[in-house]
Image 1 (cartoon, helix red, strand yellow):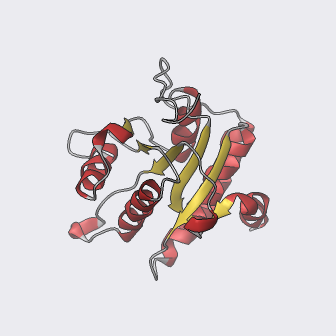
Image 2 (image 1 turned 120 degrees about the vertical axis):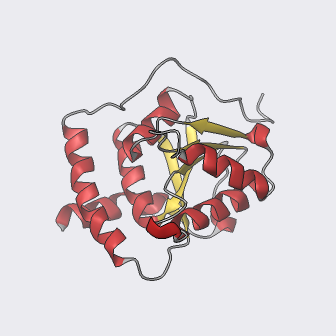
Image 3 (image 1 turned 135 degrees about the horizontal axis):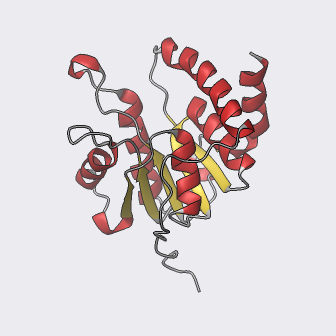
Amino acid sequence: MLVDQAIGFYVRQGIYTDIKKLPYRPYGLVLGTSKYFSKNTPNLFYSYRLLAANNLFKERKVDYLLLSGDNRTVEYNEPRTMFKDLKKMGVPEEFMYLDYAGFRTLDSVIRADQVFKAHSITIITQRFHCERALFIAKYHNIDAICFAAEYPSGYTFVRFREFFARLQAVLDLLVEKEPHFLGKPEPLPPPPFSD
């Protein structure tokens, strides 16, 4: 319980819920999740993350979106699904990049920095997930803030599961766990109006 609360307290100043107060960052890192729960029930965590990502792009709070998620099988491809749905929402495909090796939050955050060279990022996910992602980013000296997407009502099991995910995150950092894949750098484009 102390670890859970300490992580939230440690990163609280880097989390934003008001888009008007959110500082500009060149890159938005959208953390993946499944589009559906079992029995084809829509996953509102997914829907609200994409809505937030779309809004940040439209309001020019980010220039590019890095869509990071699991791609373990041909049938299950989180980055590609996010790409298709954001394109339907009006985000041009040339402003979206896909990270197929975002198997875990640790992978997504570190790969954004080390592989995609996105050194100034806004992470986009729900608040509970923001806290863990920012904790990982801070430990690795990654310049990151987080925009907290809307949290669906109910779903207390998700927050319960997060308690154990945070314990695992601390253990991963203590043993200096690396992403499953790193590979060669694939730098994202520079900000459109950078020198």
